[in-house]
Image 1 (cartoon, one colour):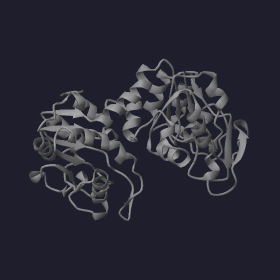
Image 2: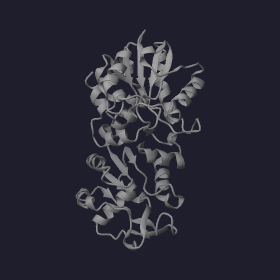
Image 3: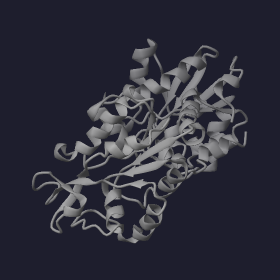
Image 4: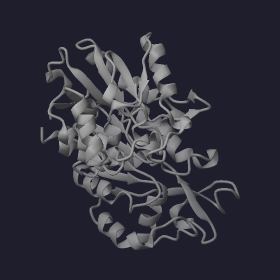
Length: 373
């Protein structure tokens, strides 16, 4: 895959696919992290050519219709302020102006989601070079994230895309030792991730609803806790690797809304209660230190303060461990921002689904397309 640094951009008309999908309320941007992460590629390109058009999606609008609440206007204005220049917001690829411009929410246009050939060709034929810098969308086979790459004569990775892959590969493929932490609600959504990480890690600590399924597979009472009975055989198979670390103590309550969080040993969970958080097991994590650590998924219902102890303690541990920490996933990023700062970690991915797919060893559609060029 070609990197942006390998391309001669002189006098080129460039299109760049970014992920500027950020939360907006009443026209106010609530989180600037993805926007800041996109700036380096934009600045780098504009140092070598003046003609650049930014393409992104925002939210999940109905294709073929305009929704003012999901317009890229507030994002365009954010970049205008940072770059101290006026930037036109356009909605027609037939009339892309010279200079820096933003194309309106690509998901307003019919054919994006289904990777329609007409839209993919339109994007590809508009530019001399198409830059894919939206790693967070790399798992989607859409017109702007797959079809346009396949149909463009000249394509490359953007700086953020390249950096995301480099950092995750450092953990998955290049580290001498790796430990992993996987939380979240369901094993079924993370089978490939767990299997791949079990193969590459010294150990994998599990939390959240995922831990409940492992606990039941081991014969523990889990009461009314979230569990996937159809995944018990898979959990038993993974336990046989000897690498799974299950919680020794858990926080239980009658429900997420009723009762206080009570810390009990896993063997003392009552049938009328639910496991809603775990005690982070520092002792087990410290038995085999590692060069790198991968973390995806909270250890409990951290949205409720009384069930946030495990996730909070995990974050505190990861902030000060000598291991380099790579974290990613929507809930993981939310938890880090709630209890800490992404600057306290070696790398926090901007991606959710793409991060998970890459951890699972999948060949992401965007990477598949880039490798053909």
